[in-house]
Amino acid sequence: MWKPRTTSLLTVALAGTILFSPAAAWAQAKVVVLDTLQASLTLKLGVRQAVATALDDLSVGMVPIEDVLPEDATCADAPCYAAMASRLGATHVLVVQGVANPAGYRLSLDVRDGETGRSLGSDGKDCELCAEDQLAPTVQEKVTSLWIRVMQEQAAAAQEREARRTALSPVHARVAEPVEDNPWWQQRTPGIGLGFAGLGLVAVGFGVYYVVVDGKAVERNTLDQAVIVRDTSKWGWSLTGVGAVSLLAGAAMIIWGREDGSEVAVAVGPRSIGLQGRF
Image 1 (cartoon, rainbow, N blue to C red):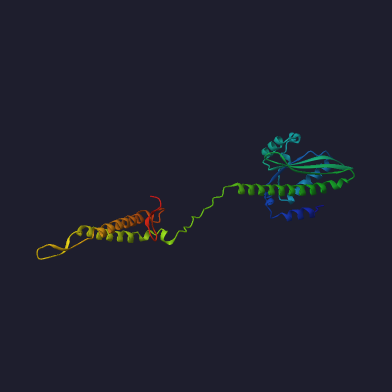
Image 2: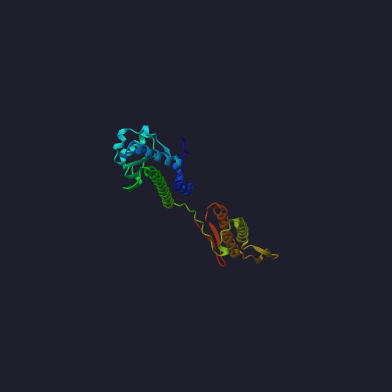
């Protein structure tokens, strides 16, 4: 008579608590079950069915039992488990070991990583006075809880590695350029370079004119003798010097003081004028 398969409340509860956690990646897992349980044929068939039911309830793929070779039962170290998983295309190995008889059983479960063969978690139960029909439900419950615990631990370890990698990765921070806090007359204003150059050019023009006309007569008498003679050399040379400095300053601001990374500008103070920056 056909009987509907029932799922234990523990399976539903534990799977539901982490359905949306990183451990849900077990949907891509594929497990090869290595059953070395020493028991009667009836008990072994019941244990295999319990394991298959637990993995199926967890939506975990399982390698067909007929693909497992007899010599696989002799595996006892990580390289052997890894080689077997690689041959069968499995991501994990579930080792079921122990002894069972109608009077009791000793059960041991071990989940191993298919790539390295190392143990990821184990569980078991030793019951000397247990009924024969209690073995299969116990195996199903133990497989479910062990698989969920292993997946949770793997997810937590992966998150910790990612957090450590992020913390150790170099951080490229953009450092803001320092804001100049100089007096207003020392701020770089390349836009007035033309003004400085224009004023300097005018001052040089007047200075040259005063130097040229210095010593020349303004008025003469009837005998063509100078009555008033110009004395403008001092003003001429002063205007020429100031104009030359202003012209050079304006040219420097126009050429090097643009907003293209140059750092040459004119520093105008209450009693001084000059160039500052890198030439």
